[in-house]
Length: 290
Image (cartoon, rainbow, N blue to C red; front, side, top):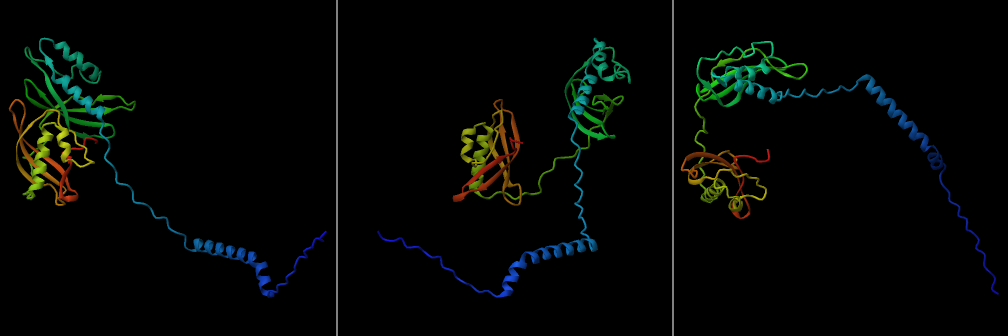
C-alpha cells in the first residue's frame, strides 16, 4: 500500500513599504474628510452668492374658446324673432316667451302688422363682441323670405348657475365691413408640363368623385376626401405656385355639374417630386382628419 503524501501549505512573505500600509488604512478617513470639505465649500458658496431663480416667461394669453351654446342661443332667438305670421300672432309670443322671461316683454317688443308673414331661411352668427365675463353681443345674419338678408345683434349672458339668458332687446344693424376679393399678386406660373399633367388628371378624378382613379396620382401618405356632388372638369384655366418653397400649387379650373351649371373653382394642392422625377399629390384643398 502506497503511503498518502501530505501537502504542506507554502508560506510566502511579501514586504511592503510602511507608508503604503498607513495610506490604505487611512484612505477611508481621507475620503470622508474630502466629502466634508466639499460640502462646507458648497454651503459657503450658496451663503455668499446664492443662485438666482430664472423666472420663465409668462405664456402668451390664449384667446378664450368660443361659447358655442351661447352662439346657438343667439341664432335660435333670431330665428324665432324674425319668423312670424300675422294671422297667428300668438305663435310668436309662444316661441319667444321661454327666452324673454319677465325682464322684457313676452314677445320681445315685437308688434306684428295686420297682414303678412315672414320666415327665416337660415341664420348664422357672423360676429361677436365681448362685454365682460360671460357676456357677449352676437351679430346674427338671417336670410328671410320677405325682408331679405337682415343683421340682428343679440346680447347673451351666461349666468352664475351656467344658464343662458338674453341681455335685453335685440337691434337691427348693418353688415360687417367687407371689400372686394383679394388674390395673390402675380403668383409664378407652373412651367413644368409633367406637373401640370398630374394636377389636371388629379383634379379631373377628384371632381368626378372617383377615388380609385385619383389614387394613382396620390402619395402613399395622402388623405383626400372627394366631394359628394360629382362635377365634370371642363378645363384648367391657370396653374401657379402657391408658396415660394414650391411644395403646393394653386389650380383654377372650370367645371360643371349634371344640370349644366358651370363653376369657376380654385384648389390648392400639396405636391412633391419622388424618386424618378415623378410628381405626386399629397393633399387637395383640405385635411379630412382635422
